[in-house]
Image 1 (cartoon, rainbow, N blue to C red):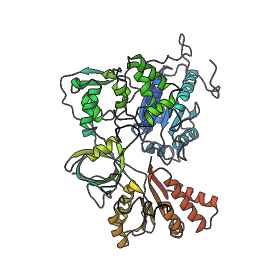
Image 2 (tube, helix red, strand yellow):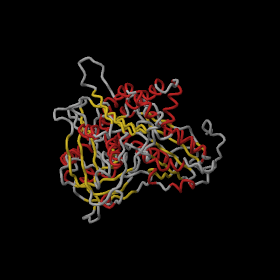
Image 3 (tube, helix red, strand yellow):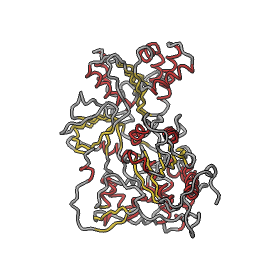
Image 4 (cartoon, rainbow, N blue to C red):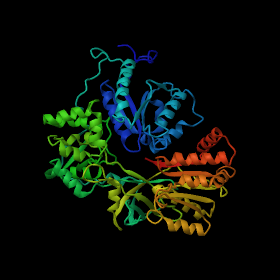
Length: 599
């Protein structure tokens, strides 16, 4: 076999160990699933992979690796996932030699969405940085696009095939294998299971010192009862001191509703064995398992706390499900779904209407899934992260959250709902849960003379409330808040707080209520207020060198706010369009423009 294009000069090393490291950084779990998929595919080239999240990998060990695959997702505004931040900051150190990774082969697969400007930005930056530190990129960077008709698989499938060609060229197999890959077939399960009689071991999450036991103090709806969206204010208290800063996030592991778990177990034919205990042994170490998974578990606990039967299945789910379907028509339909020609039909059946795994299995009734394969078919019930909406200075031993409850309709009869927000909705005063804290991206100025502009429409107000409380506590009065909502009386979150701060001259409050104008009138958004306030905005962000923080949904809002600030630099700062654009870009590089946005 000839060498893949561009790899002719790579030195073959047939005696090297057939081992590689796959490091992933994920926000929603997709990069983790992708890393598992790449590891399974690398078995075809007889490679044993070690798959690990970047934030769990010891950074000092990276210099000793000889072959690394990075799998990196993209946050809504182009920043790296939080799991990548620590490793990325280490790689950016100026004292690192430019030959640090001269003995390393690496490649990068990025996950992103071309609907956003900075498509696969972290993957691109990581690729360039690794090359600048001496690493050799063995194949071109892959860029999976959620907009593709096959979603991430549209780029992943050909990228993996090319990767296997490169690996077999670099690490030729001895005869009789030659350059042939192992044929694709049903993968072995990642675990083995064995029945046991009892269990007295502790719950791993309860033992994790990164989490704290929280008591529910408050679960209050803050939008009007007749408003279409349910937004809740939560307050949690702790017996011990907890530490966090504005912009940090609370990590919550949800429980699936007991009634839904019961019904799902009936659907699967597992109701009679739902509470039988069994051990879980991780046999295929190149595949990940849910975090905090105990060694002994029952199906009921497994689907309550660790595996997500309400997730929308990806293409790989249908590929594996086919092996367990016995009905010929069902197998034909599954074959059709995973084919290139059937991509649009699978999208309409599944992704477009957000059909869940549970609903799919209710229709493919001949599929009988062995217990040891549940970790291969069902994704982890991942923890959710919520921006903390309080200052520890204002609320010692407390965390407040502002959460929009996810509930919406598609063409399917049953409304769609979020697993974690449904779990939160059901919490009552006095309930307890475990909450972790992760560092966010916001860094506030320590100089009292540095003004701060906060832009936080909708539930983007959460980290802004933390910022404002912190600054009010410190005695700073040079803070401006731009808040956006639809109706002043329906969804103007924390209105009374902002008005009190305004009356006390501790905050300048500007609100855009986009649906309160006369019928047919132009709607007003936060970016419109910023344009109207161009003189003040330029004074704050120009001569006074203030900080701009944008928080909220990563749709058109962040770009529109940037554009409005750029317009202020032009009209009030006397800059050309290109100079104004560079000024805003320099603000971001200098840490004076911070985005905390989500998709």
